[in-house]
Length: 229
Image 1: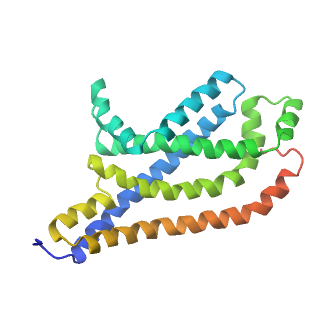
Image 2 (image 1 turned 90 degrees about the vertical axis):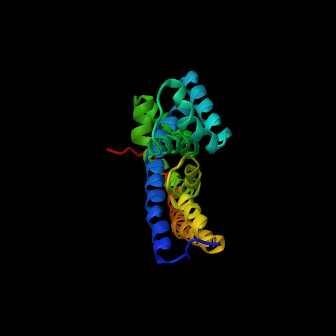
Image 3 (image 1 turned 60 degrees about the vertical axis):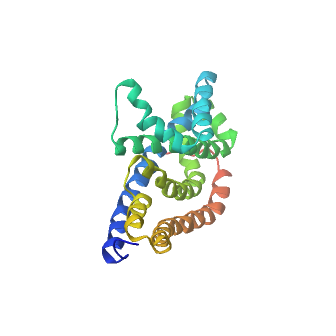
């Protein structure tokens, strides 16, 4: 027997929790994106040791479950004498995890740039970092954007895992409401609708960017060396 029915107040509680889903996803997207660019640079660096370290990082975070990584950040850090709050643990885990996936996305885009661009930069006396910053990355951005936006969909859906350490977002709010209403179809159907409303526009944007940049990238890669100021 339910303690109360699912009504406007319960719906508002879930909707308000959705803002934390959005905030955590944005933190993961921005933090993971910045870290991913560093990882991608290491993956294509001329120093073998740096490439190896970046590869190990990527394999660890891509080869272990996100939930285990979250538990390690939240519970495992106590072994070092520190117990982070749920926000810190969730943000750190999602940024580190996202950095591995973004790193592979960015690396693929960087390596898609013709080698002639690197050779021309070397002939002009550019070092690795300057070549990457002024020549390669500006051209690779168009290749990076569609899959990066597409991965944002995965980030939004994955935020539900944070509910297992007490982070109140859509999934946890739905569980809390269901325990007093006992209307799982209505409650979790609402949660599904919220996730769909967040993810569908991102999927459309990713597809649109992919179609928009496809022709432009092909033409741009045929051009001679291009440098950004």
